[in-house]
Amino acid sequence: MNRTLFSFLITFMAGISTIIGILPCYLNNKYKDKVISFSLAFSSGVMLTISLISLIPEAVLLFGNIFKVTPLVLICLIFIVLGILFSSLVDSKVEECFTKNKLYKLGIISVIVLMLHNIPEGITTFISTNKNVTLGLSLSLAIALHNIPEGISIAVPIYYSTNNRKKAFLYTLISGFSEFFGAVIAYLFIAKYVNNFILGIILAMTAGIMLHISLYELLPNSIEYKKNKTTIIGFILGILVMLLCETLF
Image 1 (tube, helix red, strand yellow):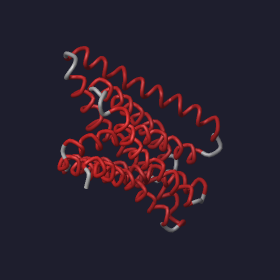
Image 2 (tube, rainbow, N blue to C red):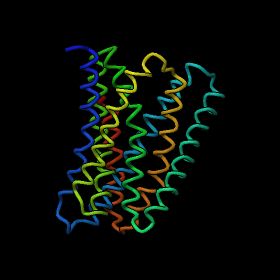
Image 3 (cartoon, one colour):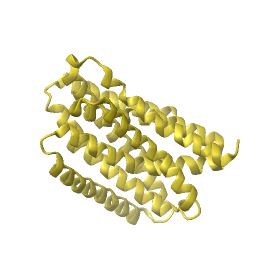
Image 4 (tube, rainbow, N blue to C red):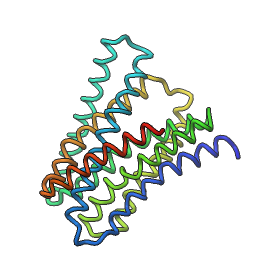
């Protein structure tokens, strides 16, 4: 198979794994509050861990190829804060439309955030596979495992706020498909011009966005369901799952 075509296929498969996150929506409705509380806390742990052990260190490495230690840290912090501010702005705008439905608002924000996260992931997967198939396969498997809990953070709030599995599936699919969109962007525009500084900015801002949604939206909303044990277990499990993924891949 043509290397470029194979790179597209691998990126698509990694992204589409997001839809597996819809599975909790098929659990019995009598466990609704526990499912929501667990899923939100789990997603919070996942996003927090991705930010702290993956996105920020990777951004630091990319900036480290250009800047010395002091400006490197400062620049990285600036773009993380910009990501947090951007997420706050999106949050306030979305809240204007969905003030009566917190869960739906959470789902919409998760779609936006994860699309921003998945597009650079798609770019990275496509470029890596194009250069080294073995590296691309390893990376795509890691991303596929990452994307399942990310899918949960979209599907569960959307489904339990609308009682519509088709809508939950559609939004989850859109988020996953954005990974393939990143590959298309890489192929058409970025592959020739991408540099460490631009990728570092994208990763640092995405980390800021994820930190905000994890600590300001997902975790507080999970706590509101007053299922403290479920929240704690979900949050810790989310962290452990992502640590395991990072360790293995």
